[in-house]
Image 1 (cartoon, rainbow, N blue to C red):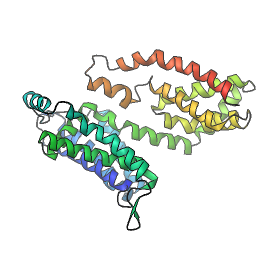
Image 2 (cartoon, rainbow, N blue to C red):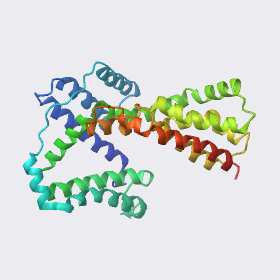
Image 3 (cartoon, rainbow, N blue to C red):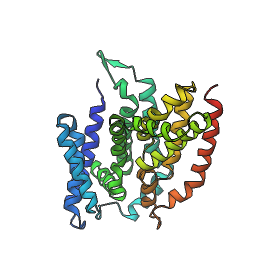
Image 4 (cartoon, rainbow, N blue to C red):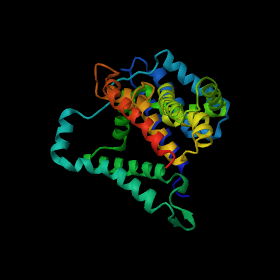
Length: 318
């Protein structure tokens, strides 16, 4: 393969390393040493994680958590373009400013759909197993290059802007990756079997409607706790979905999985653990209430969850 998922990890690691260096050199950041250490460790995991013993990576994750615990991640004053420069670019470029942003999805679609099986000299151009993610990374690179050329800025400035956004999001940016791995840990630890034992022992699963409610609401609740629907899915599907809804009530696996994941997304709307969806937007928009996004989403989440119960009940055997 010419472009593989490993190179995407390297790219992410290099960006995180740049964020770490910018913070370490920023005297205006009162927490520059711990902030630099946090993003530096995160960069090392992307760059060298596949070559490091799992115990070392685990120790690094614990250090990251300890830095967050002592509130050691902060932001300084990144070097950004002045308002006058931004206004001049906006007036000069106008709607052309959208071209680099639109290039990202265009390149992603072309790479993942049209070039997935394309070969050069017997080698795949793009990793076929991770075509979408690799194509997205290529789209980001092309979009950044176009933005630099159009705004007459250097690639270093794009890294400064990356640092500014990372500082705005803070440590919450690492939560999706951490919570995704948590789902695998829960699955390997047998949490799904424990859920199956508790639900079948203390809840009357002889009624199909009750089993559907347990699965749908359980997906939402586990997502609220874990902050990630993908982390909750193996737990609830292994504990209730497969053994009860499929094996006992002969439900359609595709319908169960689709509505189950949608129920998990309802939980995503309700939890601060899903920081990239709920806390980060509040921080970027500088909202006075960090939970304002969640409060606005509660009616939608609960309404969809109720609909999911009846949809799964009536559709899973059709």
